[in-house]
Image (cartoon, rainbow, N blue to C red; front, side, top):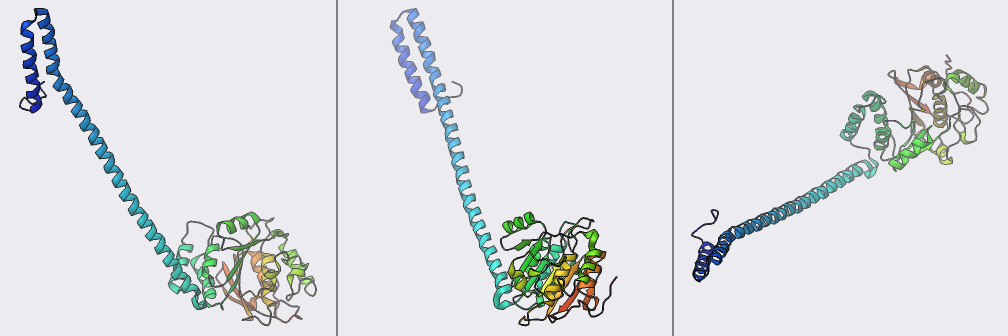
Length: 344
């Protein structure tokens, strides 16, 4: 009763009911009067009960209002997020289209600032298995000057795989790797990648003997000018698709296979194969010259194999880790890899 306002219409109404009840009780017995007093008390308490019911309804109304507000805010937020997401996707598509137009339109290479950005992020990646910025720039500069469409052959699927594909976006880039599962994984994850696996039969610990065997067969199976698809040379790679041997490669990078332990396959076969492919270019090729890069050139197997099959007179640059050779097409009757033999 204390919670009820005595001046409210509800209070006046119930006071009226109390008066009626009192009038009725004057002609009754004391016991009956006592029972009516109990009823009167019940009537006096009733407004409080109604007050509690009103409070519950107010709480219910407040809860519904709060729920409605949260629903509306969620709806508005979701709509705005969808709009932002759509806008972002549209912007990304626009940028991608612009880059594609810049790189593919008219056969022109990527703009210099785009290439510089790609090189920057590739060289600053958080991994030890990466090339330095100087090595990346040497290769990218050659790719930028490469005739369109540029045929780029890469031995080894490495940290820079996607970079090479991007820098040669206007040409064809083919990757050769010794791990068939990794090659399949890369092609599945990046459908734009063209990769093939090779089963090497060589061992790094036998590189000197293998080089000697090539010199013994230089007039037969290991000629510098030939179609390796039909070769039985121990260092020749002959199990790739036919189109591989029919392509005139403009740039070749040797950054695989992996491993520098004695039983690892080594890069002798890749270097020998690169030397043969460069010298066996067709006369109809756009350029008689092929750029060949050898990574990890500071290691003896790479250096000795390169001097034997790529030749010192063709060496343009050597910064310790990366060697850059340029090889000319040769006559099919040639049987010497180098003009000046410099065996080690």
